[in-house]
Image 1 (tube, helix red, strand yellow):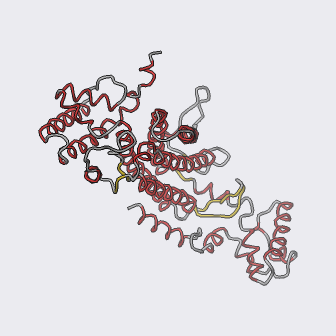
Image 2 (tube, one colour; image 1 turned 45 degrees about the vertical axis):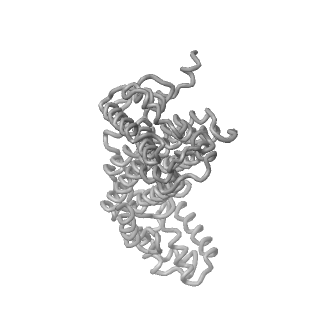
Image 3 (cartoon, helix red, strand yellow; image 1 turned 180 degrees about the vertical axis):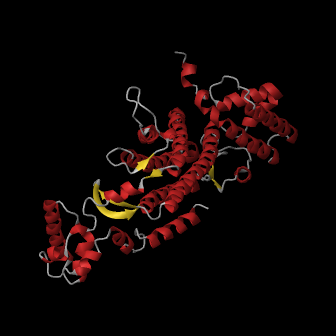
Length: 441
């Protein structure tokens, strides 16, 4: 294979073109301001870059060069002559690519946060529409206690709120402008890095030129945050897959989020959720790829860093695709409230309330727990539910049971009394919805 073809990166770093031009425009203005190149040359360079940018937006191709930086520079020189070569004064591809990546990351982070907000709004929408729907809550995929379906949905909205926070936090550390670090040692030209930082909207300039050109922490942080986003999407997908199965039958996904079987005409496979679950592994792999690329690199820049882009770009594309399809999938869920309610009759979901009742009567909770465990064993043997017990039957297990104990066995009552902050009572769920609405504005 041709070695030059082997090291080329234009096939994937072409997406950095708008950001490379943006950085170059700011750099050209700075060179002129500082008297490093004549103002007339800077104007030619700026006009040439702007024309290239317009042509790229119209679909015009760049010349085939080693990378996006050389491709744009060659096209600029072709259009405006040798003066275009002055653009690269006081900079290197090393600080140039670091800048391009940070500009691209900033835009993509904003877009992904917007997608997360849309998904959160979908959870809020579904929760508000189904505030009275009760479902069995699970631990170990076993029936545990009854909860509001809205409460379960909002658990995901809070997960994604943390994901937003991680992206915002990572973006703060990435808000440093590296241009002016040149190859690794800075430059002897009298540049104004703060001017470029302000022009490009950065909060500050990087403090160490060696670190500036070799740092890819900001990519690792982004992909790490992306891996957690995908973890949450995968957990959600797993539940949608389970809940839409015949065994659970708690929800129905709209047809556009399912597909049929090539042989079994009755099938409605939850393919979108399955693909999201599968895509999660790719993001985990991207994170490991980035960490592995960086782990053995001496300072400062090494060509290995060219390989940071494919896993980073793939993570951006995968996150945007998965989040974009998850929002309408959630917003259009068909919730089978009657089925969810009927499942609450299984698993003795009010058992904890019965133990709490004895505790309020003065028994130590551990003792009460043991009493109710024997009550449940009795019900299993008799094949009856807890709410089918009589007062007399309960009194056989403990004298503290009375008629009041029967009242705590109502599924609705169990849900309503879980009124601690963050609990599943209707009042607390409405509070969550109000909180989340403020956060997603």
